[in-house]
Amino acid sequence: MKLFDVYPLYDITPVQGKNVHVTDDKGITYLDLYGGHAVISIGHSHPRYVSAISEQAGKLGFYSNAVQNPLQMELAEKLGALSGCDNYELFLCNSGAEANENALKLASFQTGKARIIAFNNAFHGRTSAAVAATDNKNINAPINAQHQVTFLELGDIAALEKELQKGDVCAVIIEFIQGVGGLDEATADFYENADKLCKQHDSMFIADEIQCGYGRTGDFFAFQQYNVTPDIISMAKGMGNGFPVAGILVYPSIKAKHGMLGTTFGGNHLACAAAIAVLDVLKEEKLMENTREVAAYFVEKAGTIPQIKQIKGRGLMLGLEFDFEVGELRKKLIYDHHIFTGGSSNKKLLRILPPLTVKKEHIDAFFDALNNVVMNS
Ligand SMILES: Cc1ncc(COP(=O)(O)O)c(C=O)c1O
Image 1 (cartoon, helix red, strand yellow):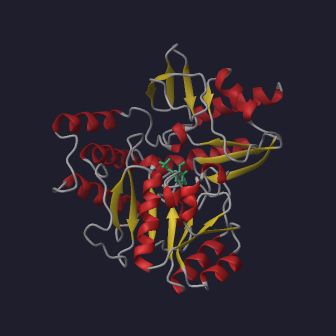
Image 2 (cartoon, rainbow, N blue to C red):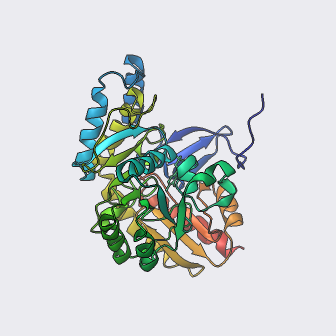
């Protein structure tokens, strides 16, 4: 059987990972500054993570959400403590799109309304409502057009107020730092006023922290730089360090009802074991502190390269904007210097999303390679 060919692939076959490196089937080791798309938080095959998953698989890998699962409670407790969001409630699912789908559905249940406000260049996933709220016509099928979504310019508070005043908006969904779109952000004023306006107009403020959350910016959640209280926070990527686990945090003014949300696999024993190990390592190895320190070093070094026109993002979710398209540069970094980096819908932007365990010496190796490429092209 052939694979359904939807992914353009680099001709590399990783077979092993260790912390910030992956090794391919030819024995070539790559520095991973992409983290498999911001997924690897505590490093590839962290020993604590490997033993937590292996031990759990040997005990009980799965049972459904029809029975007590104390691992979910342990995860909720540890997540509440580390994130500072312990007054929220946790619903577990399996992927980022599914987290946003549940967030949007919950917003609609809660308000009795159906229209969504999203922002230009947003990416929220590929399921029904999530993809409808994603600003990319190429990945929306006719079936997704049933949703009522209005896209606004990120940062346009007057337009947001005008739309919310119409009274039919169930949710405003926002990435505090856009990921796929290219690391754009609005101002503190915009975020804080958007939060207030949502509360005034009975619309749910959803923080999509799927890429920018879980310690990636040096705060647990990117929104925590601002004085805002999202009604729902969606999480995925770094949460399982590669194990498919995701979730939403729900503000307690939204009341749960049996059956209103559900999933077969969400919050299963293996997923919880993985997610608990991630939180333990994030805390014990002080990875958010490391993120802030290494990010400051990265930004300082980036500032010395004249070809870099702008440095975007925060923590270890960074974008280097050049005045040329970076496709060739990424290829040279991979094939000649064995360094993975990311792209975005902004073709001039190189995206940096390493494991949060990355050290200054790895950043030095990256800048040596980058200098070499830009000098010789
Ligand atoms: C901000 C954001 N939201 C949602 C998603 C969708 O997550 P998933 O691919 O796990 O469905 C992504 C994935 O890149 C993302 O970056």
